[in-house]
Image (tube, rainbow, N blue to C red; front, side, top):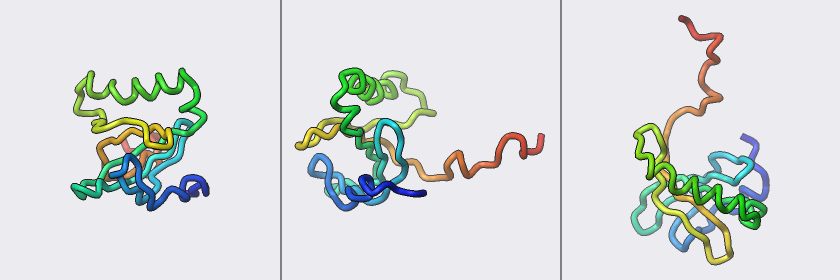
Length: 116
């Protein structure tokens, strides 16, 4: 994966004073997802750091708020758990989610190449 410089620049930094960002998992239109460790518990999480332009937009902030609460309201085992959400001291919005290990969808064979 080609990681943009702005995303890799955050590696080793902390969010909310407790989550150390260790590896970029993905970059998208809403933000960057990192593998992070809670330094107090040593538990690993996926942390989405929301892009600043999304943070400045009221509709973007509302979308992130829904993303934070919807999985817990729905309560389905097929959804990733959201453990924490908030705003860092510098105004950065973040979501702390369950870290899933496995292959990405890009690594799976296409449906046309799968045997039926």
